[in-house]
Length: 302
Length: 319
Image (cartoon, rainbow over all chains, first blue to last red; front, side, top):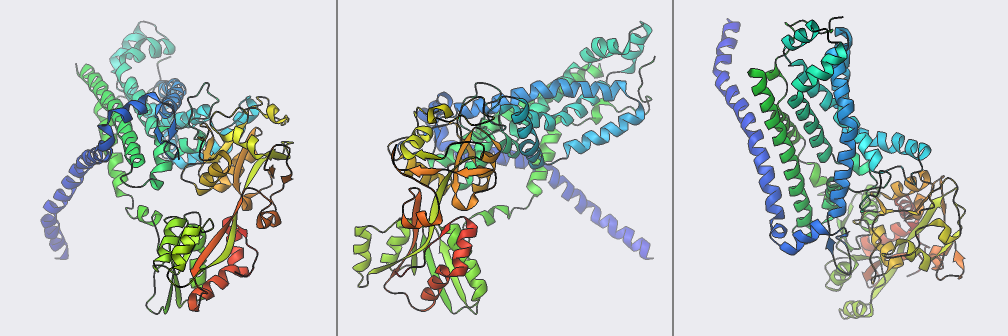
């Protein structure tokens, strides 16, 4: 009797639950659009002023607090973000691809399951913890083994960002390799190819798009990362001349200065303009990754 | 010989792996689920006034002192639950202007009041009374391994000022151990810091920009920790943050002048150049709860709290 009642109530609840789920799905889409609109709206007053935009992209002097003349040159910050991202990808992409091939093709099934769990665990480590690792472990190590005058620098940031993006590259890349039809492998084996030859000559070209998407997702992660890079890159406004120079990234600048800038001031608006630049960068990376993935699916479907 | 893989039945299809757009949306959704109340706590905070409160003391002024006065207010309320101290920043000038208009009981100021401000307050019939409540001393730190003992302020300006020509330790006549590059690594505070603002004004001055490329730390303690771990570093922070791995430099006002070590005595007497007194200004001799609060602040408990926060206790003198 009670059971039947519960079931009837469940049937009545169903449309409500469905509506809630639908709302959740749509809210995420709306949220992304709302965030974009908000950031651009806050930055709008400076985005339409040519001299400020020109200064941002041509000057290295970031002095929002100057008592003489406030300067909003973003070149050093852009150079900081790009140098750390590029170097971290130079580490993470080869390492991630190697990991993906190992997990997908070279290890035993049991090892494979263990590896996948560990990689997922690695991806779940909060970025502030990675910041700690960089600050407390990588920084003293760099001071000891290199001639660098300071341990928090481009290399430290790149190493930490690489550690953070490798799990993404491995798991997405592994799926891409996994998605290559077995017939490819069987044909290669029939031709007498070794495992390495299969990986290098057959799977790498076949999974090319998926692997590219994996790399781009790693780039997206690296560009947007804030707290860890704030802790380990040194937060110094300068264009780096080498991998041992400290830098400051776009994200770290927003994190460090937004809290103290007066709402509606020029400084505040420029920080939002930096946010717009960042949103555009990650949008480009994500959309590119999405298009590439679609390309690979279309090929796989054929 | 055959490549080791799972059987075809277990194989996931391409559609199973996460689409980047999905990842983006999921992470955005996750971000939206985090607590929205986090930001409010970071803003200005007024202590709650309980209904049983009889006396309210209003303190406004120096941003440098906001954290200090806030800490005093909270501790004082714990000691005397019937009294509440309301704290707001805005700047020393804001506090002193408000005092003249009778808006607040106490103006917190990180400088002495000007003749004009004195005149404005006195125009209301009662002259302002000054209390030194703490001393803000900034110390220049180097790692313990650095043999440098003292530095002149003009030299420090060349290290930290834009276009300054001192970039190597050898230019200061020392060769710190484990610093093969010889480059001076400047450690400082990020530009929202009051310590940074004071240091910049006192050392670099208002006519010159601060040299870009310093390692900007978010906390006073971080500066000292960074200096302690970096053999080539120099940095500045509050006096209370001195730690095992660093040494405090004596400062001379001019090249070849007498270098003064940052001691509590030297900061109180004014002999140490990078120290300033922090004041409370009141209209006329304070009475009631205002007087009790000022007495408590200048007493042992208030002064100990000032030391904990990173200021130097003031000498308990008469106003």
